[in-house]
Length: 312
Image 1 (cartoon, rainbow, N blue to C red):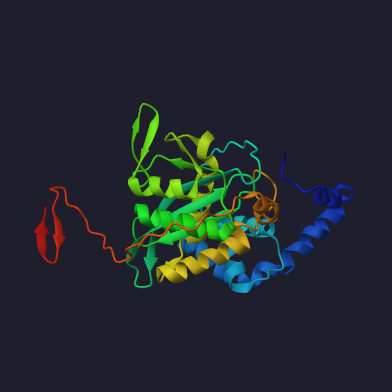
Image 2: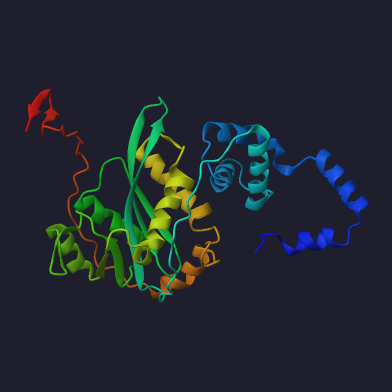
């Protein structure tokens, strides 16, 4: 309840006041393992006051792996730096997530996200995220795009996810989204023609949950938030190819390798068992996906500027 390790309690329990005072004195002059990264960590805290200790730890792993200290050690170190240099952290509201235990290989959840990033020239770019998570193991897949997802690119992201998992689940949970659902007719979901054709080919069940429904899609909402604020946030965007490469490396070292806060298990280790329960993937859905689309801004009067001309 106090978030104190029993070994720490055991260490101090039998100390006399004199021994405790001596240990504090030694600690004040002792060099910490993290000290050699102090200037870099302090720079990140001052530039991004909302950055988390988990993201700092991931950035250090990305540059200096392996590290010879734990994330909880860094968390305390950063807390002390914030106090010493008066760098308050932006408030964080914990997201609610229900934890129903589902059979291996039965369900995945899918959602989309977006985040503004900076380029090297300090201009901003909006990057879009497709995320899929297996509900049992919490094993994650991410695919990023510098263009809004269409039905075809949404389907392509599914194919990439199934290839990454080496199989597919029985059921996939979605939020109601215009990319895959046109409307709801007396409780029956009417899908876009392209996505309906895809489901007929792949033969998985769809479950659309209501908006603002954490009981149904809390797992994937947590994944999107984790991807945005542990991996993507404050990262300099160079191009979408290198961004996706870095994302896969992040999944390997952190996203799927870190102990899950709810299950208390490592997703990659549980997935080693769950992947045997996934369905074989039918022949991949083949469509010519046009990657040459260009995004335009629609003005309030429904005008789009195209080749220096106004088009309605």
